[in-house]
Image 1 (cartoon, rainbow, N blue to C red):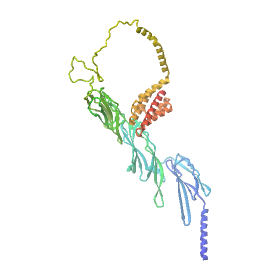
Image 2 (image 1 turned 90 degrees about the horizontal axis):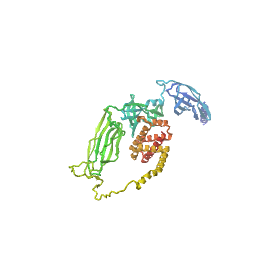
Image 3 (image 1 turned 90 degrees about the vertical axis):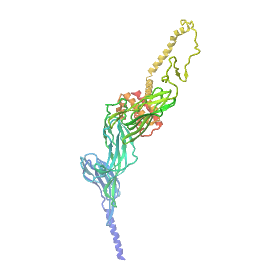
Image 4 (image 1 turned 180 degrees about the horizontal axis):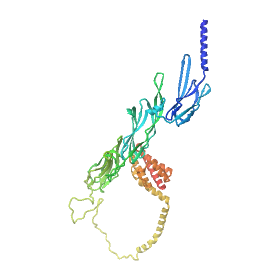
Length: 592
């Protein structure tokens, strides 16, 4: 029993000595660099390692470097032959911002109430190296494994010819894309644009630069250039969240992934827009570019007077269907014609707009007879054949069977030479008067009569009226501000008349409103339509000393016209934009 007792006491004493030795082991806190010399295009890894757990870690300011990742924390703890081993590390990944020699300053940590400091170390940053040496960082892998590309269907299109831009994200199979968000969407200045929504992200296995990649389409847009020459397509920028495999393994041998973010951009792209040829250009060409069919039809060709029919001018096919004017009908004056109703059924695909647009006229004949609807022509430019093409409609004859006869309409039988034609005036006829109410010629003379003296006094009576009228005209002429307001309001009504008629129809209203704003500036500032962009307009208005509120109002209306192509707008919003346009034009006319 005594021997067992001594053995137990000896074991306890030995354990106490081991624990005391561990407590007395010195505390270490060090900074380690992955390299002392690196190129400006390389990455630097900085580890702050301690052998005891501490708190209140304060890193240096890393002057001359940009923090890409960190701090990431790792802890290692183990027991070997009764000896406990502990290590805790804070890791940063840095990118140099300039060449030169920089000092990574001290960092501090509090361990068991004591503050410990690491020693500063010097790093030299040299010029960029062709192939960075050393172990690749997470960002190096991301740079090589992730690409955003803008694929353009045509780099040399004609004016108003469709150009499709597809933005694809290419990712290496070795990395995982967990999320992304747009940082900067392109504005597409000098283009008419239409987005094609991506409802589902379909991942495809493909190749890029000869290597295997996975690709996904993120954005699709169809552009119609509105200006010739070199036009720039702004880049799309994304912030992408990634998981990059590292060389580390977990407890079960699985590869450890590091989380990082990378900004990718599709880069600027430039296309050269060719002008439409002048040779063979028809006089009635209104800007249509594509492949179209043209047809004029009527709902009926036989009807009675006061009945109505529908005459439809329709254009269908592929091309810039929303960017040209439909030819108008030339109808006889004996037919009453109402303003046409515009209809469109257009969808946008990767090849551009396709569908149909039409104007539907309500026609009401007043008199009996036969009335021809003459043939009309529609011209367009076909970019495939690079030639202009003109289509003509068939002449249509409208036969009005019953109704009053017009004075200008012909008769079917011979007309007697001793009979006068009865002239219709509404529903009545003019007959010979049975009681002419004739009066005998009297012997009244003008000289010395009451009328004679009244005519003499009339000029004297008119003198006060002339004086009042003159003063009124002088007052009106002197009211400079009032006259400016009247002229401005008249000008606003002139340019906005088409937009007012289209209130209630979003597409028609905003197309008319945009034309009104552009035509006003074109007439007022003596500039060409091709020069229009929101930045250019803001600059021109500033040069004309237009106040900032009026500038913002004008540019804001143009933005609403662009947004209306792909955003829902209520009737209330359209009325507000119309009232705002009237106010802005009036203010501009007083200031320019």
